[in-house]
Each structure stands twice: as structure tokens, then as C-alpha cells.
Image 1 (cartoon, rainbow, N blue to C red):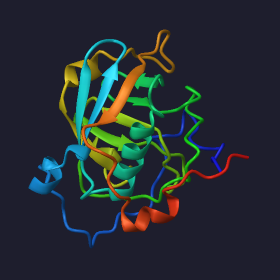
Image 2: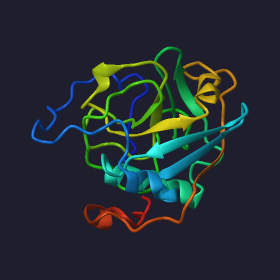
Image 3: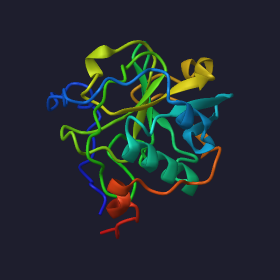
Image 4: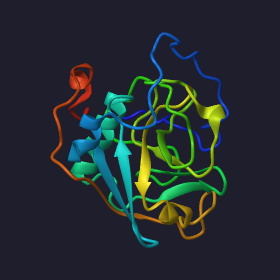
Length: 207
């Protein structure tokens, strides 16, 4: 069942979050060799404004969030969706089928996987509502370092090519003429779901 209360347009980055697990080891900004070598961990976002953005996904940091995006991208879910909330000097947000910030996929929401990846320029992270465990399909790409989001939102990758195209995404809340995702795909086949994600790998029935 889709959470129809998912993400109010004004709430994303203003809410307090649960404390991060301090016992987790710090993650390197550079992905492990096996992560970088797997083509399924390269996400491509072709934009209607021109250019393709390439993202290095980090399943070592957020396995369930990475799998969700791989799953939705492989199914074609993101194709044609807009960047509905774009704030210059902050972030560009998309992935809502309603284009309003209130929607998500038919899949269940994902439990938070807060980690030590910093919200530096080019990092891709999952949007959510006030509940830490409410991420679903919406994501945002950071346009400038915004470390106040660290360990409050789940960072799951970073742009490695085409950041200039991210900078060209139409601004606005919402933009007058939103930039669309023409196509979004991964370079390899959809990998097996992480063991902890098996229970949420199949779409839930719509209400």
C-alpha cells in the first residue's frame, strides 16, 4: 500500500531525525573496488534539459535504498517524471509520480539507513517525510555542501559524471517548466535483493 501521506513539500529538510548509530564505522567517500566495478551500481539519468548524469551507487552504505532505486529504474518507473522541487545552491529533487512531492511508488517505504557519507556537492540522497523510515521513491541531488543533512537523510551515491547537467535543471518549487527524467537506468542487470530487503522486494497491492 502506498503511503499517501508521504512527504509534504515543505517538510523535507526541516525535521529533526533520530540520532545516528555511532557504532557504525565511517565510510570512505571512495567506493570499494568491488562496488565500483559492478555495472549495476552505475545509475544513469537522461535529462530533458540535455545531458546524462551518471551516479556511482553505494550499496555498501545503503543497500536497501540502492536496491530500491535500481529496482524502480529497471522497471521504468522514473521515466517521464519531473524534478518538482529545485532550490539553487541547495538541491534538486525528483522521483514523485504525482509531481507534487506527495507521491511515491507502490512499494512499501524503506527503513532509514543513515550513514557517514557527507552531503557534499553531487551526493544523491533519499527524500522522506517526518518519519525517518518513510523514504520511498523520491530522491534529491545536492547542489552545494549541506552537512546539516548528514545522518538525517540516507545518502546512497554520488554523481561521477554530468554534474553540469544537474546544475542546469530548471529551478522552482515547482519550476514553471520542470526538467524531466527522459530515462533512468542502471548499466547492469538488476541484482538480487539484499537479504534484509527480501520482504519488501515485491509491489504491494494498491488500495
